Length: 150
Image (tube, rainbow, N blue to C red; front, side, top):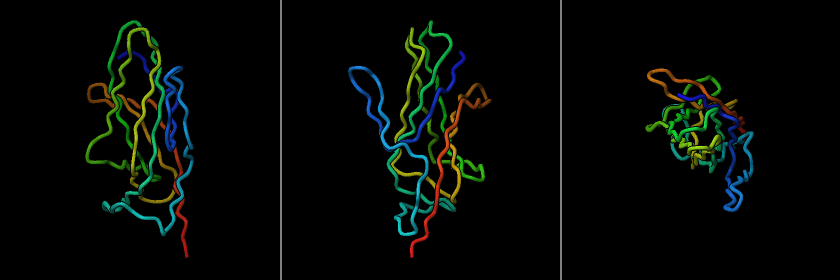
């Protein structure tokens, strides 16, 4: 596998790609999610609560050799503050199709809800699969704060 690294990943409410310049605008970057005890929960899954929140995980990747076109699959996992992987029914797989001559590529994953177990720091981790080995490429964090309403 050619050397590919994550340049950045950001959790935001939405993003827009300019058709003329191909630049991306990230709207409402999410550093912390505040959950009120009055907020609606989509569903309970064991100890996880599925919280409705519209957001996107936007990432940029770069490779060292742009001579050939390649397709690589990245896996995205979400971990809670106890470093427990919050597994969904279907793994999140992101195909990264690098065109010949292109060194960088962006990906966007859209969510309508996120599983939350407890307040604290959550991590999205991005991996490449090489055989049976998972290679960590990068990660990004966001906080969850519980606000008790009276």
